[in-house]
Image (cartoon, rainbow, N blue to C red; front, side):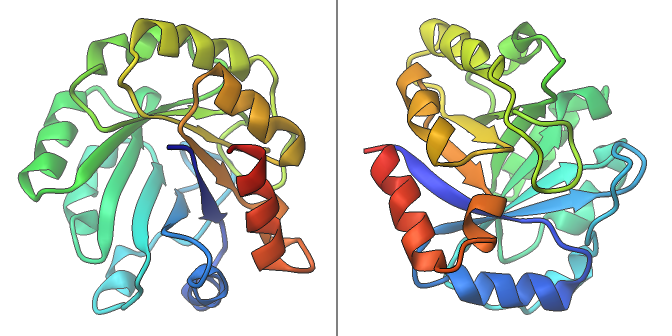
Length: 211
């Protein structure tokens, strides 16, 4: 079953909370972008302590666009986080991270940048819950979708029928159906939702594209 996950890429926690409230009636998950200014040039909100005691009916996945995520992973293993995604390129301790996240009964996602070969994900098939393909360079919201990602989706799907493939970056009505056709399950969208005049309608229109 394909699903749209709204992406929140902001500089402070107050704005993050506002955006979660805006999408709570219309989504099941929220995707929180965390950028450290090292792995990415862009810096976004990245304070796990802000989430302590935070209540939402949404499931939260945290996308760690940070260098050496093993140094701070313990701080993110908290409620209400349900899934943590880290970058294949950002660490050499992949299995350590997978183990730590699974130990606390949370889901694991592993992500690759647009210019990283899809075969870099091969060692993690069956070891993580989600494979995330970035269709834009890690960083600010609003970048253009790279069509080359469609081939990556297709290759991974042909290799692994049961894998959950998530596409993140530049997702809009024009590309949503194409991603699903190639085999994606989850589409992360930010600008197409939060810059729309009507958020409910924007999510519905994207969802209609992937049915």
